[in-house]
Length: 329
Image (cartoon, rainbow, N blue to C red; front, top):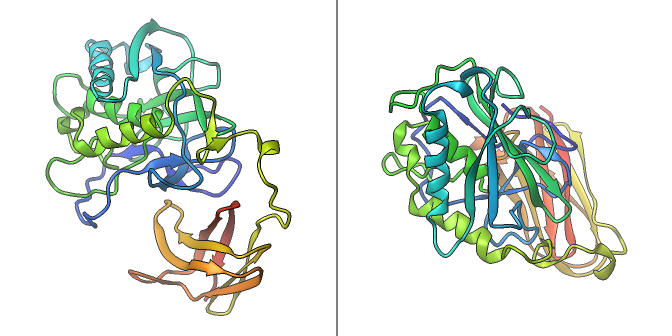
């Protein structure tokens, strides 16, 4: 389900067919963050006010085309897609308009066409039902999105599993920059819940609408691309003369993370697993200029993590950096 494109493996913007009900109810929607100008199906889950911003659309009018190969030609598919688009069109004050523009022979490639298609592969196999790829310009502006439904799954439009409209609504949310919600309530789950839960996923919940309005309010369509609320022209920004870097090395029983600060500033250093779930916050305070080493023994809120590969992210007012972390025995 997870793919590596130009960086660490993060949470894939896909939906699985496994049902999971456990987990915290405390936090709400999350947005997709990937600061690399690439085509990607992965991204960090971040809050609306994350200082590094998140993926977003810069226009309100977004047209989609359907590749009718495979199960894309089934009766009712077009109507299901149109209904899913209409769900996202009915959110105020956001004014995004998703529309169906006909069929296409385009595939799961960067070609300027927002395409929905059925295929066996494209990174979506096994328990994966569908996967969205975003094409990101500098500043995390979404210039294109493609949705690949798993053609190995039997799809339906009559309200039985697996439901095209419910999954389309979920994946279209990804195409607007919305990641999986962190709500796991057993009833009235948001469309952006990470796992398939039937036709109830067709209708948006407050959590979904709040996510779209978050994007609309932080990145008003029609304005120049922004990065974390400031112009994307790096030459216009104050330079971080030291260059924020984060490194890690294994040690018996854990790992050592190292970073340096050129000036006194607030620092947040977090650990994530390969699915993009936050495991621990190692630093969250103001630090003076200097070099720092931070040990991690694998401790998380759920106990000690097992040996393997994890990912660290450091964020300061000057920027952010990431590093792979090998947790040793």
